[in-house]
Amino acid sequence: MLTSVWVNLDILFPRPADAPRHVIETGLDLTGVVPGRLHGRFPSIEGDWYGIVNYEIGYADGRRDKLHLVDQFVPFNVLRKRE
Image 1 (cartoon, rainbow, N blue to C red):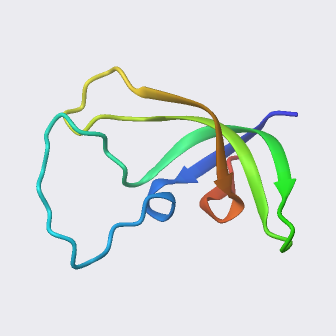
Image 2: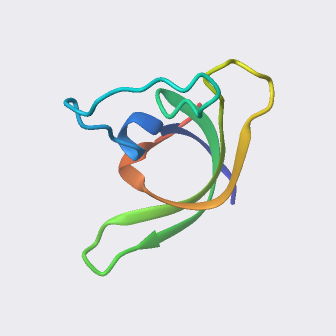
Image 3: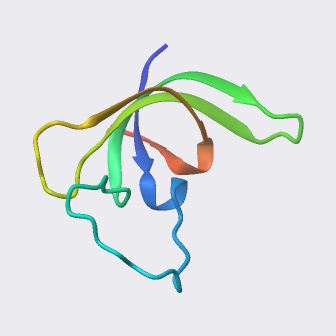
């Protein structure tokens, strides 16, 4: 069953606060929240839940094309149900 979700890229791709920053204008924008489609749920042996999600990441230069990510295994703490 497909579920519409929000994927929090800030949590999925954390960046240390003290990491040096070098802006690449054509790079991927790994910040913010993007829409996704959850289509699988799996528990770990420790009881944590993970989802299989399709979502897209945009480029920093604002181009219309996006990187389409299919069947990504992500922890549930980066997902929120989209109404």
